Amino acid sequence: MKVKSLFILLLFSICTVIQAQIADYSIFDKKFNFYIANDLGRNGYYDQKPIAEQMGTMAEEIGPEFVLATGDIHHFEGVRSVNDPLWMTNYELIYSHPELMIDWFPVLGNHEYRGNTQAVLDYTNVSRRWSMPARYYTKAFEEKGATIRIIWLDTAPLIDKYRNETDQYPDACKQDASEQLAWLDSVLTNAKEDWIIVAGHHPIYAYTPKDESERLDMQKRVDSILRKHKVDMYICGHIHNFQHIRVSGSDIDYIVNSAGSLARKVEPIEGTKFCSPEPGFSVCSIDKKELNLRMIDKKGNVLYTVTRKK
Image (tube, rainbow, N blue to C red):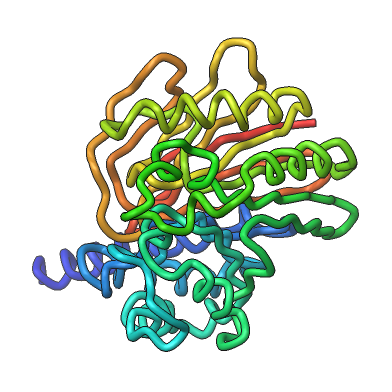
């Protein structure tokens, strides 16, 4: 009898946890939701498969409109063509949940720049959900009166390191960095939406053992424009962990989204509001008065929330 009672109690506890988790999804109700995912391509290994499954399961409840894919969909040498098998093993066969058959809006990462970058754009003509109209581009969205503009940047050509290493990143030096920066300034000058998010693969501020020159170039060339136009948020990948940073003199939330496969250690730096070495993805939710970016681990737990209010 005691064993039976313990079993019933355990079952009740499990059900309570499940109900609590499902009930928690109500925070996404009546919001415009989208996913943020990057640093994915590991042929399903490490945590890529379970995170992909979690993204699909969670999507059943919250209905994301699209996936903002901030680079390095393909490790390690990019892709060779639109027929490269990596499209199957890194992407199509991994993110196979029906609820992930939504638009994916990507940018190029440094690993894509090791391969055929034009093939990444051309895959738009092959896949129904892969939507990459240009190396950098912008889109505006509206939901129940709330508007958001997202600007996708091609960051590798904005960093001298990649432009100079022509043997490893042959396409980076071929891009006109000044033209892209002038375009960014022009788009932001004319942006009138409630929320403005800029996304690129490389961070402006972050803890990372990678070359400091990467961040310095992004600060000099990109951050000055973002501050001038007072954007709400800059979102990137590249570092394989979660970070939220605020810096003196700027009201921008600088977000590093963790890897959707292999994550790395992280430490706080000056301006760090939160950091975590967990792999995962993020969910961004907006309405007219509030923007929330929630960092999600591979089990679907909300690790941290960045909130902006009007």
